[in-house]
Image 1: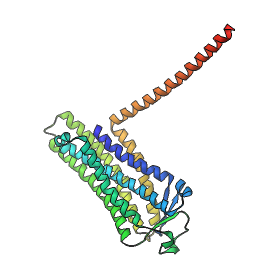
Image 2: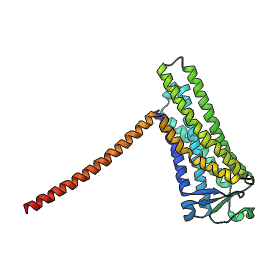
Image 3: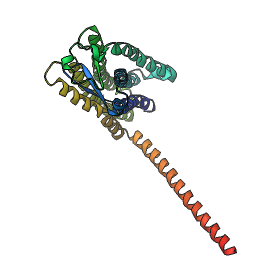
Image 4: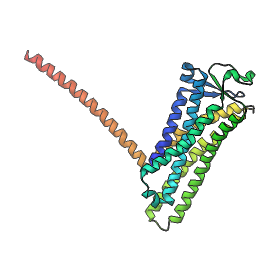
Length: 296
């Protein structure tokens, strides 16, 4: 559970970063044009096209890494069940290095492929589709750059969805095979943990991977009817994924709820101590002031 919490922190950290970026920058799809309008704080303060492309790239980069974090977490759970003895012999630093390399292996190609798809608004081929040029940033509506960027994103999230299903299935399979060789309480704990992980795997699939693939598909099919509305609805669903995932994690795992409770109690105790110290200081000042007045 302690090591598994590191993977949950990893994916939640990327999700938080993406939500924070989306809070200050709202890229709104503008189909049938292959463009987005940058609303929010960044859109008002920095309306340049390059800022919009960079911000949108960073938002999608956090989304990609959040998917990678989810894949790694379920891969680790499968390895701990199927190959627990081998995992125990590996030093943690090699595990951290492996996770970093996997993140980089998907982040670096994305950073190269996605910005190459962008195009200046002045060079957009179908200018009649552009509603206005204020705070817009656009991408080439056709060509190999579009296929490479959208194909890469679609493949990453399809791989994430398939990986979650495969690793969860393999976990249950190995647990069923190992039930004859492990203690009853251990099997019971593993079964309860896997039940929780199944719920946790359903949330990223239903509220993350599938809406993302649908949004990517309709961003590619910009001339289809209601493509903008469908993409916008999918974005709203994806933005709420992290909140539901985090709350569900705390509801499923009692150990995490216990740690959160300890943190809240510590913060509350410090706050109460500070208030008590301030009250005591005021009381002492009043006492000293009264003593000085009585002496005179």
